[in-house]
Amino acid sequence: MPTQGAADQRVTTFRVGDYVLYRDPERFWRGEQNHTFVCRVDNVHAHSSGGNRYRLITLAGALIPAARGAYMRLLPPADAMRDIDTAPLNAEGAADDMTAAATAWLVQQHAKADRRPRLPAQQD
Image 1 (cartoon, rainbow, N blue to C red):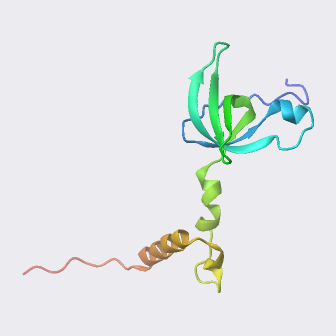
Image 2 (image 1 turned 180 degrees about the vertical axis):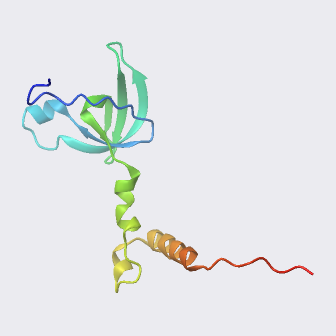
Image 3 (image 1 turned 90 degrees about the horizontal axis):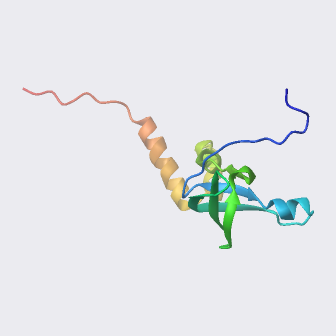
């Protein structure tokens, strides 16, 4: 039975190109600010002590050369796209806060959903 407060030992493998949330454990445990970053996985390499180490690039462009996966959490695409997936198309001003690309994609999806299936042309 696990003890209360035991560390969560999630074993996750990240891939190059994944977006992750990384927490710098040293900064965190020292009580420093700015210890958590959104990053993109740039490289994955096996570490001599076992497991993988990840080279991360923060969105600000800083390099984190050997991050441990235990201090990373995947940022799934579904979370980044949730506002687009749930945006009301018919509400007044709904598209005002979306980018042009997001609005165009939503309009295309809405147009596709409104199309009625058509029977093929009758051949003589």
